[in-house]
Length: 218
Image 1 (tube, rainbow, N blue to C red):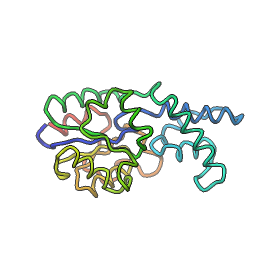
Image 2: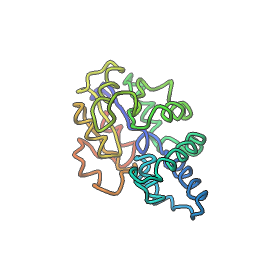
Image 3: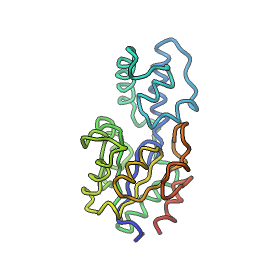
């Protein structure tokens, strides 16, 4: 565990599988509008993009469309009410965190999810007392792919950015990590979207299961 002095994770699609609860909120809205529920397989890839991605996939609406704000606000209210019904850590991730903790390596969360949702979710899945840093999308003036959130997490953890590893399932994560001077890992088991595949993001490492992190950290 001496290769890095701290490890930071994106939340949605990297640390925790939040897509089931996000999709449930989207489909509740869909049904209320008299439409058939959208297949989970269509919603999962856009889960990392929050309301913008899920409303886009479910309704075909973009943020500039006049209907979007009302759909977004109702979706977010539904999600907040049932934020951790089905959400779980990805298989193998708790073992990774436990081994980091046993080795005395601090770990944290850096997400574009705003604190309104990050704080209760992290508490609900039992990670709040364990994380050395939890940085939300509105913690700093900039969200990823800007490096500010990652630099803030490093500062909170007392670790130089160059000694940190950042793991994410979106191109923004890798861009942010590189801009912050951190080593980066593309989490191909995550949501990843349907644009450029994770092996083209330019990360230092590519993994297909959380357990593969243990070999990188050894």
